[in-house]
Length: 482
Image 1 (spheres, helix red, strand yellow):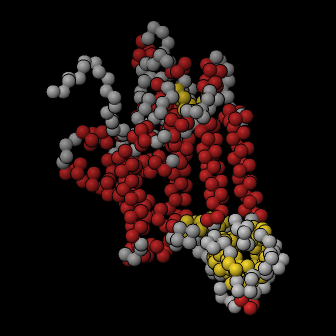
Image 2 (image 1 turned 180 degrees about the vertical axis):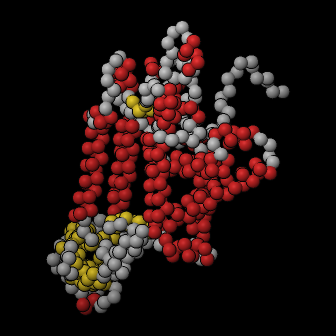
Image 3 (image 1 turned 90 degrees about the vertical axis):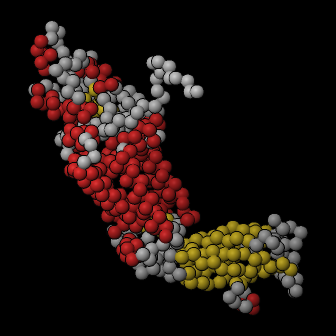
């Protein structure tokens, strides 16, 4: 038999509460509108931007070509052996997130996070179909009649269309967009395309349409991590309690024996919050720094003829200074502090390093893999042969003629599988197709008595642009194989 729950027991988990954000107008709401338009336009339109790379390379501006192991971003092309560029970009993204968080709190969460952007979009769909906050709450409590069923089906259908467009746009980053779009609708696309589109459609539909603030509060690790980067000098959305307390309505203020604060306890800051928190209770994990509560509070203060920014972007240090009667700190002074400058300096240094590496990198490359079993062979005339697999990379969008050479083992010559040994020489010429890597089987032969030694395969382009590279390896002989 189960033990009864003891009286006064505190539940381990709080029951989920539906959040119905109220529509609001103001500077930050308009900023969110504009930034939403920018981010959604970038996401949906980028795969359709063309970029001319010549006749031998794809003309999609941003393309993650997994089939050919390439990453294209406008004029930049990243090959598999250059993954350090991608790692550098990820490090820059991480440091940039630290920089933004230390300067203006969770502004990323409030304006640019995909979960926030699509949730905000779906909330506007809610208002379009169901009405504003009060109408949504009434509809939520009403029985399932024809009106409610019709509105739910219409709203969820719009959710599904947006979610499908989201999943469909994502797969366009991995193949030529016009071609994949045609193949997708004609049923000729690869199964992975349909699977990926369906998976992202489902996650967008569920996370943006139904879970919303629960993702930010319970699923996302960033609110927990950000606390290590915030200090008393970080800008966050803050309720100025010394101005607002004690709270009381306008009517109570007239009849009160002691003066009341500016907050009239109208709860508009709570009504507009997309995560349903009360900013007046102080910093909370649910605050995504969207600043819509500032717009709502400023609107009320303007109607009452009171000073705006009872809720404001401010630092804890600045609030203490303002509470003591000092002037409000400027945003520029708040941001331009040593910690921010250090973050920004590191971010710029990595970025400049990547740009320098891109500027000086060769568009020609050679690598050599030596046979290990056997490491060498003794031929009938006593000469010693080592076998290698050479890979030549042409990172240009046109075919290039290259010359392979030997640097070291002065008495050695080489030949390849596609030529007779009688034509062996110190150099070989091959044409490598545009934007490809060509493998070549090479045999290096040295006369009897040659000592084991290191040497290098070299390659140089024979066109006007030029370029060269080398790969160090080893020549094995009997008794000294490595």
